[in-house]
Each structure stands twice: as structure tokens, then as C-alpha cells.
Image 1: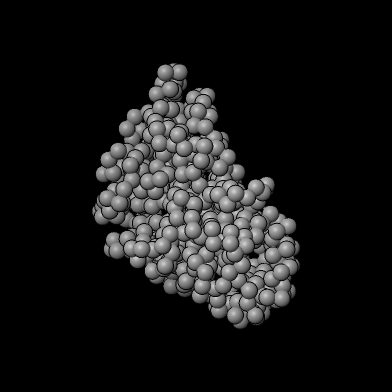
Image 2: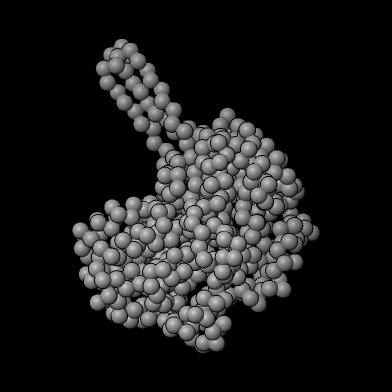
Length: 506
């Protein structure tokens, strides 16, 4: 489609007007701020029709029922008129276009949410582009014998309703969309309201890529202004056959109450154990990499460290060498005063279903370590992570704080480390990390913690294929048991049996 300069201006304004009015005055607060004019000029320089031209044309609808209906119809067309090779062609088109637009998406996510780091948002987009499985993930099982042939196919559910988090909004949409389309589904998203503009842009790009490859319109949709009411409408719709949610415990509980099959990726509070056999320099580097990545927004990120007492000083030394800054008791108290809030309403929030005395202040989630230091009137360059020594009961140990602050707890032996790590993980069974050269210790911790992701001698990022083997995912379904999701997760098993023994086979 060829667009005039006037058309492009209209398109850009339709995507950006809501963001600009609310964020431009706050751009000075953003870490490494990027003016929205930069994004606008980047979009306007594109010769492609890559944004909302009219209501619903690229999958973003004002009315949630319209979004549901459009995706439902698109899935019917997908199954009727397109095969597996067609789906893979669509997915490759998505990968190409998102790779071309990743800088725009990363900038808009940072401007809109004001959390995390631009370079790490780019890295997450690249990871989902390159390491999200497509149709190759779908393998048919077969059984043959004297009694005939039986094969088990992985078939689509149909229309999927999906919820996405503010911490990884566009990455989750892209990752989910690729896997769900590969499996033959369509999807309607209810994005986190604080990331609705960047989510809309991701949905727009995905649909453009699908149409460019000859696929159906509106295979991926979302409601323009997502709310709890729109989520309820999606969950109750008879056209939605599967629910998938990435976020906190409250969201997972909501999906599980729907009466439909639900895949829930809940929160985590990943502990790290460091024992006396660990390569402390390597361990420190890996811990800093995982805990500081995108300012600790990832649910898999290292959230608290349990280290054997007689190597604790050496580990802290290595952490400081890798870019950490140690908070003394007074500075730690100051951070707690502004980064934590008393739970005066006795709310259930955070990484578990239990009520806690403190909650993390939303104003400080995902901010740079330097922002914390500036608040403390400390001038330090190139600080990646703040560290502090605390006891097991400290709020920073018990809460999934999503801030670049890593509490360190000294323990007497490995049994104490494992016991406290399991307790701090709160039964989420999400992610755990250990640095040790003792295979017996590693095995003992793995059996005790039973997390979906278990990483030894590497950054937590290795668990999703970043510096490690295996495919990536942004939806780690610990609460409902599916684990590291991919295309096959979003399928139904269908068994076909052809009986008759040798007459059939021979």
C-alpha cells in the first residue's frame, strides 16, 4: 500500500496521541530518556503501512466484542484455507518485520512504562524473534503394531484469550503470537493498561506481517483500552476456548475461576545459592548479569542470595568488582523508606498468596540503580546493581521487589541455605539458581526446590535461552504446570486409531 505524507502523519498521530499527552512532560524522569519525537520521526520515515489506519484494520479494536469476533473469524479462515507451511511463512514474516522495528518498539515501551533499560528491551525482543519455536515444535506421535495404526495430532484450541504484563509487554505478545499461530490458533489480547500503546503497536506490526505474507486479517487482536471488565468479557466469551495469562497470582486466580482451561504464568521470587566450591568470580558475574537485567523486571531474575558464611566476603568482593554497590545499614534504611510501603490495607500482593507487612512502591519498580543512588545523594558511575546484607526475614528477601536491589543472606551450611531458599521461593516453583561444583549439592537443591527453571553455574537468563541452550518463552507456566511454553503448549491432543491389524498395515 502506497501512502502519502498526509496519510503517514495521520497514522502516526493515531498511535502516538495518547502516549504523548501523558508522557512527554515526564520524559525527564525516564532513565536514558528518548523523546517521543524520535519515535514519531522514525515511524514517519517508514514507507510501509505499519500502523492503525482505521478501526480494527490491524487488529486493535475499541470494542472488546469486536476484537473477539474478528479473531474468531480469522482463526476459522486460518484452518480452512491455510496449512502448516503457510503458518510458518506468516511466522517468518513476523520475525522479519519485528526485527526491523525492534528499536521503535523498545523505545516506545520505555517511554510508556518508564521502567527497565532500553538496551535490555532490545535484547528481549531479539530473543523472542530468534528463539521462539514455530511449527517445528509440533510433532505427531504414532504407534504401529499387529492391531493397526494410531497417531496423535497436536490440534489448535481455536481462539485464545491472553493477558500480558507491563514488565514484558511487547515481548510476551510476540512470543505468544508466534507460538499460538504456529499451533493454528488466533488470539485476542488484554494487555496491561500501562503498556497499551506499545502493545497496540506490536499487534499492529504482527498483523501487518501476516497480511504481507498472504495470511488472514486480524489473526491477532486486542482491545484498545484494556480493563478488568474487558478481561472478564474475554474470559466469559463462548468463542474463547483457552485462556493464557502472564503476570501475578491475582491474575492467575482470575483465569482459573473462569471454568475454562487456563495456562497461568505467575510471579516468582528466585533464590540463588552460592557454596564454598563455587567459582566466585564467575558466580558474581552471572548474578550481576541476571539480577540487573532490565533492572530486575524479569520474574526469573535472581532476587536474593544465600551464601555460605566463610565465602560470603569473597563473593561480595567479586560482586563489587562486577559493578555492584554495597548499601550500608543507614542507606538501606533510607531505601526502604522510599521504595517500600506499609501494607496498611492488609492486601495480598507480590510474589505469593500471603499477606505481608510491606509492599513494593510502584514508583520504584524497574528504575535504574543510579536513580536510587541519586535519591540517596550518592554520585557513582556505572553501577549495575545495589547489594545489601540482611537477615532471612527482611522484606527484600521475602518480596519479589522487581528493583535492582539484591539482598544477601549468610548461612552456616548448605542445608540451611537450601531450607531458607525453598522458604523464600514461597512455593511458586518458578526459578532457582545455584553456583556450586558439587553435583550432590546441586541435585539436592534441585529436588528440594522443584522449580520450573533450575539453573546451575550460570545467569538466570540461561533458563530461557539467553546465554543457554533451548528455546525461549515469556510465559513460564509454573502454577498450572505447563512449564516453559511453546507452540505445542497451545494445542489439544487428538488421537486417531485405525484398527484391523495386518490388513491395514500390510
